[in-house]
Every structure is written in structure tokens, then in C-alpha cells.
Image (cartoon, rainbow, N blue to C red):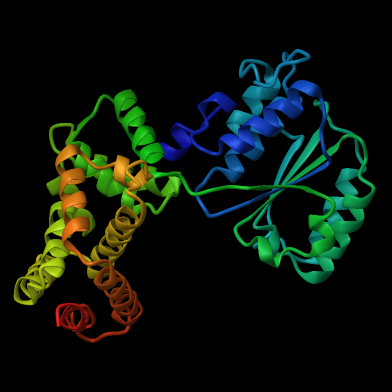
Amino acid sequence: MVLYRKYRPQKFSEVVGQEHIVKTLTNALKRDILAHGYLFAGPHGTGKTTLARLLAKSLNCQNRKTGQAEPCCKCDSCLEIKEGKAIDLIEIDAASNRGIDDIRELKEGIGFVPAKSKYKVFIIDECHQLSKEAANALLKTLEEPPSHAIFIMATTELHKMIATILSRCQTFVFHKLTQVELLGLLETTLKKEGIKYEKEALEMLCFSSHGAARDAQTLLDQAMTLAADKLITKEEVKTILGLTDKKAVFEFLSFLSKKKKKEALELVNKIYFEGIDLAEFLSYILAYLRLILILQIDDQTQAPLFLALNQEEKEMALKISQEFEEKRVKLALEALLSAENKIKFASIPQLPIELSILDICQ
């Protein structure tokens, strides 16, 4: 079983990140103040479906007492939801069931009372993909829902939701996870799996997941499959997944700060011919160059990206922030952002970065 399914949180206390949402939902459950419509919005892989299932599990838990929020995870209802067998939990993918006929069928089912549970819970994923007619049909149901029905909708594109649906739901905005949160998640997973690791290997996986817990666990799955002797090393991660390490990133930034264009150009070509994804390398450069700018403006040593560095890397970042003129950092960010857009279409992938280096170091 893949990691993100094997270790999907079964209680609110197991959820990584999204504290603002977990706190609000658990308080509502403790006080029995429930809405009939919820809308979970945010980037993919941040826990929208997981929290929707957790909410459904708590609502229908047969052993949950007044004033408690956590499901027992032992009763028939909790076990059926965990195993995907609960008949009163209906999950719909709006991307493939987006028509008005699908919603009409849903409305017909809403009229029937739950077969075994207190509530009939409908989770509608990617709900922004519902057709206009289907969205309007759903709206009428949300206006006057039966007391036994709870709707939990999830979307990655909140701006595409019609205003009338938004006004009838409690909206929760999910955030991308920080490097520190993702690192903690992967470390906990590997501890359970009994696999050793180099910390920088996990940091590389976390950075490449761009704040999505599911993506981080998927990358970890791949690294675990390929790891030798139950040890995940940074060299394996770098080679196999086409990633780069932070040493090369800081070396490149140091060259830019000192206007060493020859060395910077050589490093880019060395990375390219090693098979490293230049677009991924550039995303690293931009993230850490932004950190340099933040350090120059307000010595933000509590910034999540800075906290994720080891002591040697922190010293390197602070040193570069002192050497790199603020005006040139801004120029470098603009030039490399432009290169990021061009690299996707360039027949010579390293050329947009090379031109940026010449502009930054002139």
C-alpha cells in the first residue's frame, strides 16, 4: 500500500499542519454546532479529503460522547469509513460526475434517511468542475437540506465557485505545509517503517513536493523503493529523482554575489550534464535567493525556510546575504524569474539561465 494511504490520519490529532481548521472543526464537534455545508479549498495534497473523511467519521462515530471531537476508530461506523465500505458516506468526483443528471440522482438519494448512521455525508471532490446547471441544482439542495444530510465539498480553485454556493457553506482555506512540517511527517513515516535516512535527502524530497504532504509521501515511496540497505541517501535521491543539493545552490548564489560569471556558467553546465532537472534547480535558486532578500530586509532568522537549514547552511545564507548587494539581489530575482518562464520552451535548456548570469554579473 502506498504511504499516503497507509498512514492517512485516522484522528484529528494525527493531522500535520492546518491547525486553524482542525481547531475550528474539533470545537464545533465538541459543542455540537454543525453546518450542513462545508467547503474545503486549497492546493492539492494538503489534506482536504482526509479532513472531510475525518469529519464524517466523527459525526457518525457510535462511541463519541458529548464534548468530545475525536472518533473512537473502533466502532462499526469508524471501521467501515476507514475501509471505504460505509454506505452512508458518499464520495463523488465532480470532475467525472459533473452533469445535472448526476446531481439530480444525488438529490433523490438525499431524501432517504441514513441506512446505519446518524448522518448521510456527501463528499464532493473538485466541486468547481460542476456544470452551471449542476451547481444551480446543488444550490437548491444546500438552501433547504434535510436534517440528516451533511455536504463537504473540496476544491483546488476557490475562485471558480459560484457566490451563492459560497454563501451557504462554511469555507475553510487550506495552506501548503512548511518545510519543517513536511520534514517531521517524513521522519515519522520512516521511523514507523524502520528505515534510516540522511536528513538532507528528506529535505530535498520536502522541497520538491512544494508544500503538498501527498506529493512528499509519494516521492518518499519512490526513494524507499530504490534505497539500498534500508538507507535513503541524498546522493540516491539526487541522482534518481533528478534533484540537486543545497551545497550547489549556495555555491551558485555565492558566485552570483561575487560576480564570478565564469564559475556560475560552469556550474550550470556541470549540473545539466549530470542529468539534473534545470527547472527544479532554478526553483531551488529562486527560493533561497528570496530567503537572502528576506534576511537583508529584516534578519528573518525565524523564517521556515531558514529554520530548515543546518548550522553550516545557516552561516552560508547569512554570509551571502551580507556579500550580495540588495539591489543586485532584486535584479537577480527578476532575471531568474524570467529565465524560469523561458526554460520550458528553450531548445537549449541552460541558455536562459546563462543569459541571466551574464545580466546579473555585468
